[in-house]
Image (tube, rainbow, N blue to C red; front, side, top):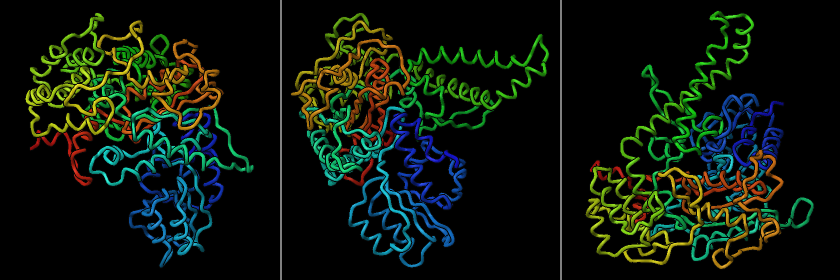
Amino acid sequence: MNSHFFSDFSHVVFPKSCSVSLTGIKDTIITDCKKSEVLILDPFTTKLLSSCCKMSDLMSEKITIVEDLFKSREPVPEMKAIYFMSPTAKCVDAFIADFKTKPKYKAAYVYFTDYCPDDLFNNMKMYCAKYIRVCKEINMSFMPQEAQVFTCDNPGAFQSIYSPKSQDKKKTLETLADQLVTLCATLDEYPGVRYKNNMVNAKALAELVDNKLAKHYELDDSGKKKDKTQAQLLIVERGIDPVSPILHELTYQAMAYDLIDIQNDTYKYKAKDGSEKQALLNEDDMLWVKLRHKHIADVSEQIRKLVKEISASKKEGKSDGKITISNLAQMMKKMPAFRKQVTEKTIHLQLAEDCMQHFANNVEKLCKAEQDLAVGLDVEGVKVKDPMRTLLPVLLNPYSTHDKIRAVLLYIFSLNGTTDENLSKLIQHVKIEDEREFILNWKELGGPYHHIGIFFSRKPTRRDRSQDQTYNLSRWTPVIKDVMEDAVENKLDTTEWPHQSECPAAWNGSGAVSARQKHKASSQDDRRTGSRLIIFVVGGISYSEMRCAYEVTQAVKSCEVIIGSSHILTPTGLLNDIKALSKGPMETFTIEERSNA
């Protein structure tokens, strides 16, 4: 049997361990229902599949019809249907409706992403028992985003957890905990759990996850209790680092998602002939994977070299200016791969040019001020004594309101807070008197700026990176990288990072390996014999923080770092979320509303 279905997951998340688990998913679903031609998905499982699987892959498995669970569908009573869905009341009700009165299909093979509550399962049995051939739980309710990044595909969790008007915070934390358990199950890990002290949501989530993990691993298939594996799960909140998601980043991926309108990982652009084009920025684009964490200056240089290679490749079929049969045959063999490479290079040449255009227009000038405020030192390493002198040129220049808000926030964070009087002046400067929530609502995130109108506690001590080679406009390092390196080196203070459950031997000092050691780059498969650090950030992660997981993994041969959150942040998205914390659950707000009013 063809092995395409689900197989592409193997390169999307944590290649070795996850591919083993996902091969099991493929074998389970396809083996159980080889003759089924109908696949029915909910929005989450649709996203899950589309992130790693093409329609042609499904068709190769004889699945010719893919339907939306919640849309009206024509009955096909002679066919069996596969239902791959989340274990929610809405999904189960839609499933029951397909069979309760007049069955739409001959039989149903039901696969849940996670544990199905007894009440929902009993409802299914009551109305549909005679039609259900299979009902299984797959334990995969997280979204594989990249090789070392996952999300819970829940941007709304930010409002649910941090809005003072939220009514479903407890339920949201429960759901996130369930999703984290399925992540650990997919990776076959039973980690020790720790959380950042003085962060109430991180603590609550750590308790939930630890209890659910204990229940999940209470007994394995052989009837024995599973021991802790060589893994550690750290849970933190967005408040640990307000700077990283606000700064203008100059690494390729972070810069592109900040400055270019990329929706659902799709980059839209105009070709030279004026036609509209679009490209998906994902793991299938090997050039994207190679370039995404590099500084835009390096990206631009590499793409220029690649374009020269294209020109040289076009001449491969010629010898002394003439096309030879031998070389023509070689070119024909290479043609599909060659076309793909040319397309990728063209896409990234355009995307890099778009990024550099924004950089030249205004980002370059903003970056110097932002870096000085964030780091607290100028490019010469001299302490910034008067941050207001750094901020004023930004406020006095015709930058967008959005950019000025970001600079004001960095100024406030640099001072560990400011007075109410000074805050009012800043808000007047930016002309957001009626929308001061962009700044004031940061207090809802807790952390060191829980009272943004007054001076607050001292900032955490940072690692000394003065000897690191960096670009002048990229001197800031996300706080989460310090956390990753401290965890790997077993330097996390137990008072700052209490244990919800004890970590295995690899994390008690005997297995810690310095993140500073420069090991030779090894393949991801080689690393799987070592330990694993999983970091979950409540409230969203930025692209620069995602990059850190790869950097630390590359530096430390014995440990793989995986990072995840409810969702991925862009600066504009985060500011809109912060602003919306003042509104009720059904209200929305975007930063563009002000200019459109």
